[in-house]
Image (cartoon, rainbow, N blue to C red; front, side, top):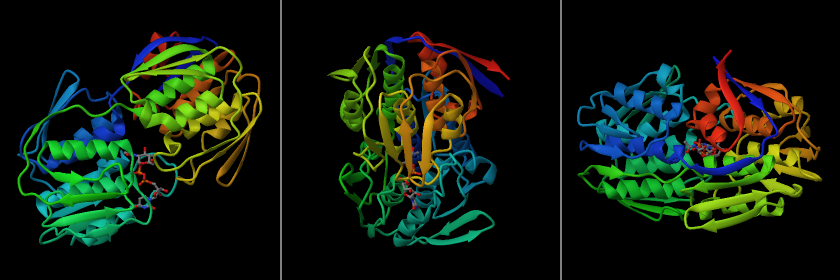
Length: 418
Ligand code: UD1
């Protein structure tokens, strides 16, 4: 077990390279199971979710080798269609393997997935979509059992634009017989990235980024090298950190368009932003001003994965804010920890009512999920005095070299064993 010790109060200066997106890399790694040709994914982030996904690929019989920051997957040796509970519980994205494993073996047995405890997180839309493609599904002792004679394209209407369900259905449909149309599909940039990767290895997918995705089944796939898009949530976390601490930082290698909902809010907060090519520069020296309301929505709305970090920022703004979480039921679990640092927040159902305070005060806090953990770290950086943040395993799931990158920006943060 490890913790961060953070001496708050330093302004942040400098530039930070943004990692490739966790939420792109995970489904792309799952997609590598679809082809028996070698796939090289470039510059993968050093995060535990990726390590766990690679372990699962190993358990399916795929060979995965790291070369520097790249990973090479050879799925030609894949010979197993079962993912045991111990691995599936480690990360939510294990569910993405359902589509590719069924496509490859016409059967699958996968334990219900784990991941951040931020709400019910059902997988009914994934399963209903797969059923529409001809998969028979039963559930037994915490396992999802699937089999089919063949996968056949169909029209699938999602009840809500679930990112994971959209990706899982795409992955199952690319080698199905005939055409699949996904309606009310999620429109996140990571879905467009998955489409780009799939087409690169020979699939025929179009429409990602819009609400309708059309997939024409193909028989044979190739391999190749692929560089996933950058992580808009990591970039957003650093920008919010700099807004909270003050100073001037540049996030390198990130499309501003993919986080425009955040950039609009940060401007309202009183930050100066400049965008040039794939660099976003943020400057904040004056007071932070509250934005009246922030509501999480599917893309292109404000991302739920930046809700906790933005609520932390609202805490030290001049004035009051209301933050509404529309996607996940229990994504305010970090708030009692923020209160230990002096935050003045009342939660009622989906809403957090935040009254601005002058400054956070250092405290001992524990992260309970990935983004909530990041929110605690950046609050501690902006706080007066020393804080410790426990339970880093949550943060390590999604932020590679987090403290190293923060130190480079001037933060006083060290990781130590408990
Ligand atoms: C993905 C992201 C996660 C992000 C979330 C929302 C990955 C690896 N993770 O998670 O970081 O927070 O999108 O942007 O990409 N739902 C159902 N039934 C289902 C599936 C989802 O009711 O079968 C509901 C969920 O409970 C939730 C909403 O749909 O309320 C959105 O969830 P979804 O988009 O599926 O999130 P994930 O794919 O799990």
